[in-house]
Image 1 (cartoon, chains in turn blue, purple):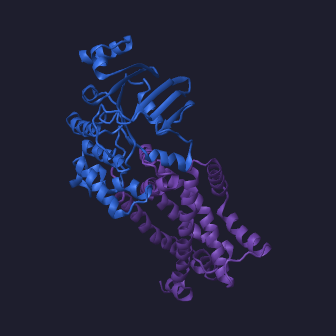
Image 2: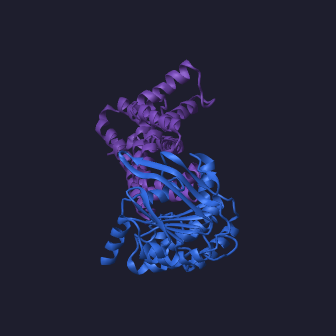
Image 3: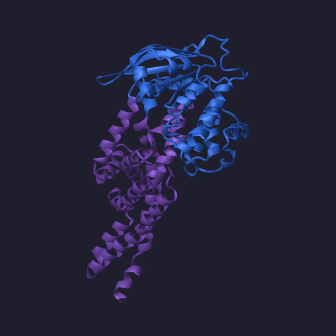
Length: 258
Length: 225
């Protein structure tokens, strides 16, 4: 989380936190990312929408190199993502990631899930890490579950712990890869509310989601992807009321009729 | 019956089994350490480590244990003068432990790799995403879950190791169970079948608890997902 709290729209610092330049990626014959250019500035909340198979999750995962890219470059806060090793690990620590399937460490308690990164990556003392973790768990509303194992929590609670785990590294940007897609409907809002809270506090966020409500409420910019390309970029207001491309109109039309 | 019981006064059968248990104990520790290192090499991102690990497993696993143990005594000790202890008998014991550990490490490696396959790929991704590099991710996230997922196959390796400890007879560990049995068979031709049965039952008694323990442990330590 950023140290100073500023509103969503304030974008005084224009150095991009994330910058993708001419990124291409293939899965065999499938050209899954086609010449992607994207800049995300500090404090900006970018929501990536698109039909399944459009490459939006892949895009999200390339940003901390969980997926490699074929050509192009990805920069985090001005530094090009290294290929492997210690440098890559250090850069990943600056990029928080929240997965669709939560991926909490199944053998560790909730508290240990959050303190592992600060202790092992940042060399924080255990007492200090515990304090940090507790305050973050408090913030996402699951501090009372701190001694349980992930499997004992509901999906919504697990995902909020996953957000706290990412926040514990004090990342420069947070990536959300369909964070509510594996949740029961009644748990989606508790996670979205946490994310809206983060957005309001000025966290830089890239969110792949199907939750149009979140895009409307919290996004500064919507990116619409189809067939591995960025088809449209607009403010949520523009995108939902006046989409330009046929693909986007088709996509939104299907959502509304459902 | 009296005839049978005389076997136990003439020969120290429990002591013979005790040697096998000691061989197993030390070899199991060695195999576990070496096998874990090999498994980590095989899942590491470093290609030369992967190749080495795969090469080790494929060569050692496919070599008969008898040959490995004989190599230790005849080649390493006799030819090259390699010793692991000043004491004559202790040296043979240590060579046997070394051979057993080297051989079973290949199987431990594969058992742990099967455990690694029980860990969802998302666990490794989450570990990497918070900035852990390979070794800390393996130590903190992957191995603890993989070991808990590989208790049963590791138990099978231990069971094989207990029985294979009798092959130490070929590396001149003359006081272990199968050597003692051979001596007994030579001198007590009247009791051949009871002697065989005694040693067979002895191993079954030692091994059954291992199977029960590993089944129990694998349930108790299973990672809830």
